[in-house]
Length: 94
Image 1 (cartoon, rainbow, N blue to C red):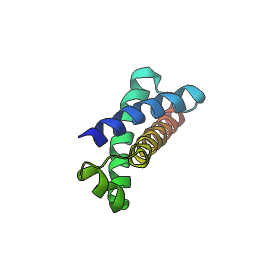
Image 2: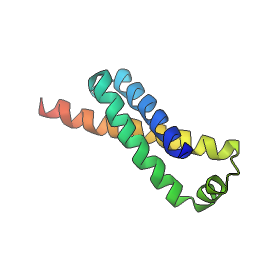
Image 3: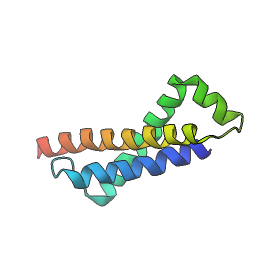
Image 4: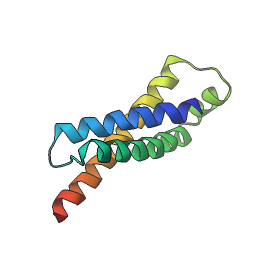
């Protein structure tokens, strides 16, 4: 449960960061947050599945700073990537 929360928060931050960094990708604060949450949750979970060692340490309750950093980076990147994709599509069609 903690890993999902970390992914979602990091995703929301990443989504807002990329939205505010480039007007081409900006969906507004709410849009950036929602896209970031979804992207962070999805990509964060994919990274966990790709790196079984990280998932094993999280599930066993042996949190270490490396596991937390992995979740934050994965969630933040996922949020930023999805916000950029959705923003680019939205702005291209407008």
